[in-house]
Amino acid sequence: MEPNCWSWRGRTSRLLVVLALLLLPLCFLGYGSDNDTYGIVASGYSTWHRHLPTTSRNPGYWTYEAIVYALSRVAGYLASNLATLAVGMLCAWRFVVIASRLEVRFPGLLVSCLVATPVFAIACTSTDDYVWSLLGIVLCSELLIADRFAWAVLPAAFAFAVRGANGLVIAGAIAGAAASEWMRHRRSMPRVLQLIGVGAGAFLIGSPPYILSYHLAHSSLDFARGMIGPAAMWTLKMRIDRFVYKGLYLFGPLACLLLAFALPVRRKWPVPSDGPATDYRARANPIFAGIVVFNLLLFFRFPIEISYLIPAAFFSLLLLGMTLLAKDRLVTVAFMLAIVSLNLVTPQLAQPNIPGRSTDAKLHFALHPGEMIEDVHQRFLVRNCVGYDYDCYMRNRGW
Image (cartoon, rainbow, N blue to C red; front, side, top):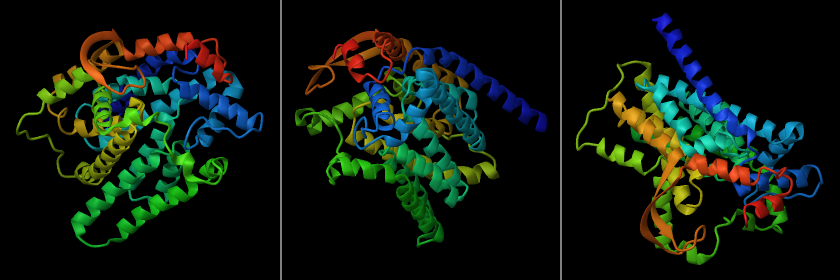
């Protein structure tokens, strides 16, 4: 059994190296295509070099802006992008470790699905905070499963400090674990109180950066308001439409259609034999489900960028690996290829009346360049911007 274990680990290590090498060239194409990326770099420079406290957007990204400033001073965008790729691959490695503990049948294919997901691949190769905060969420969830509550506070606090919206995602992990504990024992348990303590500790340790946001907002909570545009964009109908339509493009319409066909009325999923995997699933599944549900609730409140769903992508793939994608390797391969195709060709199913600020949309089918192709194109448009000059980004994007 031991040789097989080492053989499996060797194959997984080689796969992660191959995936990292596939993404590596994108790290040489500038800071990224997202306007927030250049806002992060410019704000970090203003705060830490010019000593003029500035943050890129609400509620404040001071922690990540400091990290990016330190990295970019070493070797510009190359240092920050390579560091982000390393963090993204660390997330992928933890994905495989968790999948093995869950006894998921096709961990290599599932981690390939994760890395091929456009928003994850782009986040891994850009100066963005998504995979940095994801790592904190992943490590926190693993420590919660292991009942190492004191240690779980630290990655949770890091995820919250890097990206304030992660507070709700972490709350989802804690709520899932606490609900599972309560349903099993039907009374207040020490473990529930310890889980609540993790959330409180993470909030206390991760919140100091937001004190500066509070101060710059003239001692008000205005800093916590999302920057979401005019009210006409956010009627209930448009909020639901954005939530459903953009959420569909996390893995892509083709991948979602394939999952729908793979869901029969009744199906028995493969289950592990009695042992460590059974206990691990019992502890992990409520936590993963809580993260996915709370991430979706957060996205319903702010259905702006699909990248907000990266935590849901990570943990929903693990859940799918135990259910819809558990029985047939061919279905998993087809699902992976459907995700890969989204990087090359994007099927458009609706047309907004005002791109980027729509107040209405109509059904319209068209094929557009894939998410990765479009990202590379946008990076070339701003390749001459060094990052500290946010206006350069805006001019080159034609905004």
